[in-house]
Image 1 (tube, rainbow, N blue to C red):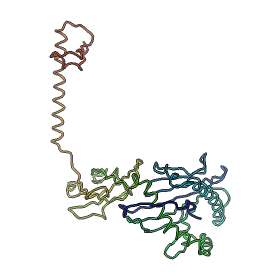
Image 2 (image 1 turned 180 degrees about the horizontal axis):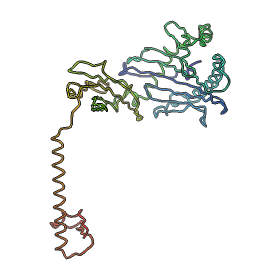
Image 3 (image 1 turned 180 degrees about the vertical axis):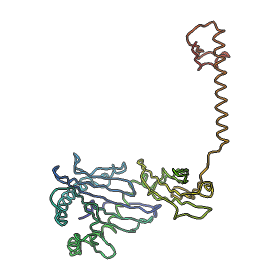
Amino acid sequence: MEHFLCSLLLLGSLTLPDTWAGSHSMRYFASAVTRPGLGEPRFLAVGYVDDQLFVSFDSDSPSQRVEPRAAWMERVEQEFPGYWEGETLTARAYAQTFRVDLETLRRSFNQSAGGVHTLQAMIGCEVSPELTFQRGFMQDAYDGWDYLVLDLETLTWRAEVPQAVNTKRNWEADRSLVEGWKAYLEETCVIWVKKYLEMGKDTLMRTDPPSARVTRHTGPHGEVTLRCQAQDFYPKEISLTWLRDGEEQPQDTEFIETRPAGDGTFQKWAAVDVTSGQEGKYSCRIRHEGLSEPLTLQWEPESSSTWLIVGGIVAALLILIAVIAGVGIWRRKHSGVKGGDYVQAAGNDSAQGSDVSLTAKA
């Protein structure tokens, strides 16, 4: 197999800064799924720059064309004429290749005809803040299990299951094939990362600092957990660390992996179990590219005085409302108006002008 986009010509030149903050990556994911009795396997492919979806292809779509999935890709045809046509032809060819490979794999695993099977591939590269090659990756999976993985150091394929050994031998027999992949991952892929970063820099190169808070949770048996939550941040890389009296608590911390929020930003939390009454000894330290310095937060219990102040305000408002209502009733009784609404004219400049919004029923 070849790269989803490797048939594109590398056109034009870029004027880029010497460094970009943080590392960057480009990844393509392709998959084919059999569907007995419903026709040929469905083929789908998506491309990501960093964690932003920018292209996709679905063999079931009416157009059967590669389509943009990021606003900044709308102008790619202006810079690289023929881009979408070349992408579409490549994707359609891969769809057919994956279908043939699925049948070959089914026989290799001695599986009977029918049933649902999947073939997946992932390929891409990661670059440094200086936009130099850091690492490349290419691997295949069948029915959810790793099948073959490319080792760029030795230029060999690692068979993850016995059924992959024959494929490994065939692919390694042609040295030019693996050397071509090495050139793509270490050179061509890096060039396209630079191109896409330039085109989408307003989106891809932004830094949104996290909004964060610490919450306290009590379990069914009285156990206490403090949770440090960060959200609305971009890029994805972030560090959440719990400290007790200034000492990090990595062994006692539970994390969830960073997750997309669905609006182009990310979210993450880290939790630590504490002894009730000891919450003040713990603090959460957050590091992110969008922060000029680490952010440190602690859980702050709601003050009883705050509730007292709020209660006093509410009581005062109730008294004020009662007084206003009483004044309104008194005025009606002495105005000679019986029944209907009491509504002061909006243009009245008299002393009663303060009752413009007051409406009372007789």
